[in-house]
Length: 397
Length: 196
Image (cartoon, rainbow over all chains, first blue to last red; front, side):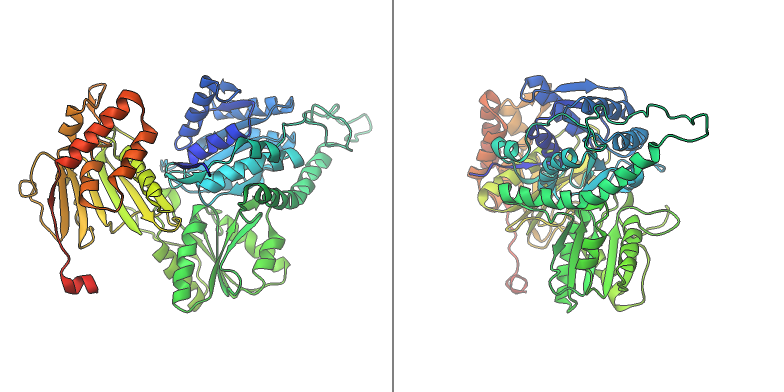
C-alpha cells in the first residue's frame, strides 16, 4: 500500500533529500526554510541518513561548502529563502560557472524592505540570471518528486538546480504526500558517479574553477576560456530543456506520477483564454479557470514548471490557439512587467503569435490571493481592454 | 468541501490539533485535506489561527478560509479578541474549550455550539509537559461529539500515529474525557433555509 503521509512541503523536501541519499548537507536556518534544516539535522544525528551536516555561519558559506563538496564528487543539498538566497548570490554564479550538480531548495519568501517573512517569488526570480535551472512546484507532492528529479537532471547536464516552492503556503501547510519506496528512488537515481569534465569530453576534474592563465599574453592576446565556458553553460542550459522533460517522463514510468515536464497544462484542449502562473498560484488558477468556464469562457491554465531554461517552444506550442493570455505572478521586474510575462511575450513574439497578453502581479509579501479575484481579473482581461497591473492593492495605512 | 478555522494561542496546540484532524479525515476517506497555519512569527501566547480544508477531491486552493463551516476555539479568552462567529456559516459548528456554559460565554447564533473543558480533561489525564497543559488532542473530543464529519475512531488512529507509550495513553484518555463531557447546544437550520 502507498505510504501517504500528511506532511508539509518542508518535511517533503527533507524526505526527498534523504531518499536521494545526499552525502553532504550545509545549510543555515531562515524562516520559512528552517524546518528543512531541522529535519535533515535530526535524520543525520539519528543515523537514519548517512551524511555529513556542516553547520555553517551563513548562506554564503553554505553554498561555498556544497559547491566544494560537489566538486569532489559528493551528492549535496542545501535549502534557503529570501535574504539567505540573496546572500548566496555570488556563490550561485560560482556553482553554475563551475558546473557542479548542486540541488538547492528555495522556500520562496518576499524580500525586505519593508520587512516580511511571508511568501512571494521575488527571491528566486532575482536569481534568474545566475545560470541555474529553476523549477517551480504547485504542491507538496510535486516538491518531493521534483527534488528527486532535480538530482537526475543536475547530474546529467552538470548544471545546478533550484527547486522553488512557496513559503508558508506550501512550506508549512500539511497536505497528503505519497512517499516513494527507497528501491524505486535508487532505481531512478543511481549513486553519483564522480564528476568528470565537460570540456571536449576529456577528464577535467576539477571543473574549470580557475583558468590556468587568465592574463593577457605578451602579444596582448587573451587566452580563450572565460567567454567560451560561459557560452557552453548557456548552450547546455538550452539543451537541458530536453533533460528536464525526459527526467519527468522517466519519473512517471517508475512512480506513476508526472508533472508535465517543462509546463503543466489544465483544461488546455480547447482553451481560448489561458491563465499562466508558477508555483501554488497556478493551482489557485485552476479554480478560476473552472469558474470562467461556468461563465461560458473557455479557460485553461499553464503552470510554468521550468522557468530557466525558459520553455519558449513548449509555451508557444501550447498557446498557439490562445486569444487571451493572463499571467499571474508573485514577482515583478521593477520598472517593467512581471518577469514571467516579459519572457512569455518575447517567446510569443518570436513564434509570430499575437494573443492579448496581460501581466498581473499578485500576492507579494504574503497577501492572500483568492480564486475569485483571479476569476474577476482574468474575466476583465478577456472581455475588456488589455489590462496590466497589480491585483488587490489596499493602500498604505 | 468543509472548511475549519482554529483559533488558539502560540504553543497551545492549534497546529497539532489541526494536523491530527486532517490525518483522521484522510483515514476517513477524504482525499483532499490541508492544514495551513497562519502566523507571522510564532510567539508563545499570541493569537494564532490555522485554516483546514477537508474534501472528497485533492485541495487546489491555498488561500485563507473566509467563511468557515466550523470554528474551533482553544482558549475562551480569545472570544473577547477575535469575533470567531462573524463569518461562521449559518448552521455551522462552534467548538470551544471552556469551563463555562454558552450562556456564560454570551454565545448565541444560528450555529451549533459544543463546549468541553478540554484544559481540565488534559490536566486530569496528566497531559502536562514542562508545566504546560496540552489540549491539542482533547479539543478534538467536543469536535467528534458534535459532528460525525470525522469519527472518533479515526481521530484515535491519527493520535496513535503521532504518539506512543505513556504519551499515547494520556492523549487518548484526555480525548475520551473531553468527548464524554461535551455540552452540545444544537442548532437546526430552518426547513426553508435547509432547502435553499
